[in-house]
Length: 137
Image (cartoon, rainbow, N blue to C red):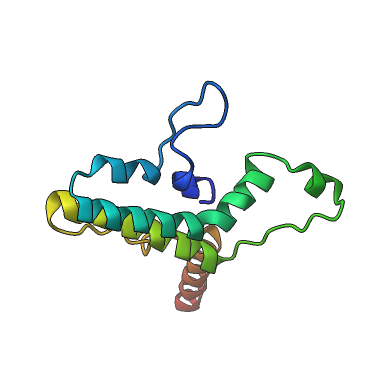
């Protein structure tokens, strides 16, 4: 999940041969309506802020290995919580809904309610197994 929240990365990767990235930061430039473009730009900035701790975690622990963290030399590990992830998802959903409403004149369901984390999935499966055992007894 944290890797996918990088949809707020810069439009091009860093380096002299910067390759284009799939990012919501490109969306405002695709809108001609100045009001919608400004609203979308603000939503993208909010999403960028909400995703920051998730990106920091990705950069330090998943995609790269931060040397100070690996050496435990005074670096403090980041702890994104489910609250941070949910806020980041909600901010990206707001961006996608703005785009959808502009082009289709109606919203879409970009709801995160269908997304189960591994712990929630295990809890649901465990509850189902318990109910099955109870009914068999």
